[in-house]
Image (cartoon, rainbow, N blue to C red; front, side):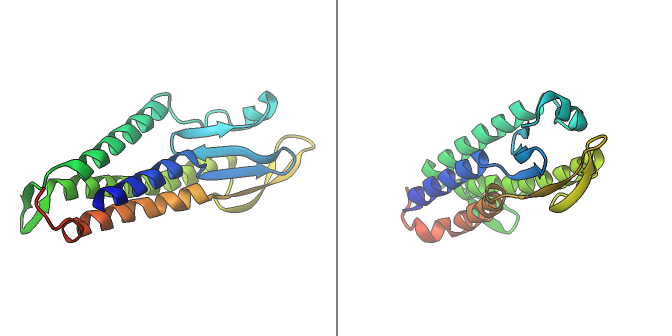
Length: 181
């Protein structure tokens, strides 16, 4: 049962990873004009309009780093699901290696999700003077003053759920798995 739960949460992890986390709909340009995913910004504007947000992209190393994070996280979750019960003492606490791996991935994903919204908020404000959530008027150059509707998407909210689910599963591991493997 424990391994099945880990696999379900891995599926949710993947789903949250591939769904967009944030989008901005520029009214004169259409829906999903700019989309943020865990590995970077996706610009759906034509070249002339894209000049407005030039420089807001993440550094070149960011996407490969995030994909490496995904691969390492999934590998640790699979390892945590199948590893034998080996206890590790951390001060007063006794955890199995499985709990440590799965809970560690959960904590790291919470950090990724929190940093994503903080960085997105800073970058959208710096480059576009745009609210992360809500409606903002922007000037695209004469005579185009338009509105932008921006907000966090279901992929982000799912990602907010995955980290705590992993931590909860890690804490409940010894209750779920009663036999020594």
